[in-house]
Length: 124
Image (cartoon, rainbow, N blue to C red):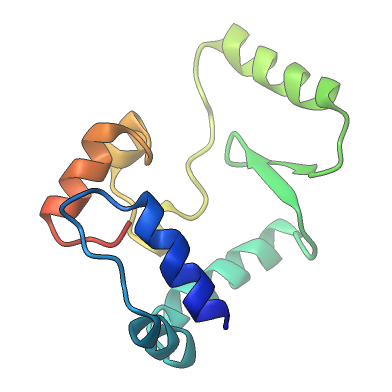
């Protein structure tokens, strides 16, 4: 049932020329080992950071903020980054998940990135 719902939802958000995965393809992915190594490395990274529950936000590559934190906590962190003019930390999961420096610089949900990914056959 979940695969059917996800397949239907993906139809609404993929680019016009991209083909969303079928229910069968989603089930094969969910029941397979594809991505298992990346998930294991991500879990190890979270463990090293001391993250044992969700939701959490990792900001500046090092500050861990509980998802239920007051908005003032986030504002203070982002203002400190703005005053410095630079983010000190790296994206925690970029290497693990194979996210390029270019995507980090322009953002993962920019039109340019989505179009480039679809041209290279990457899933959205």
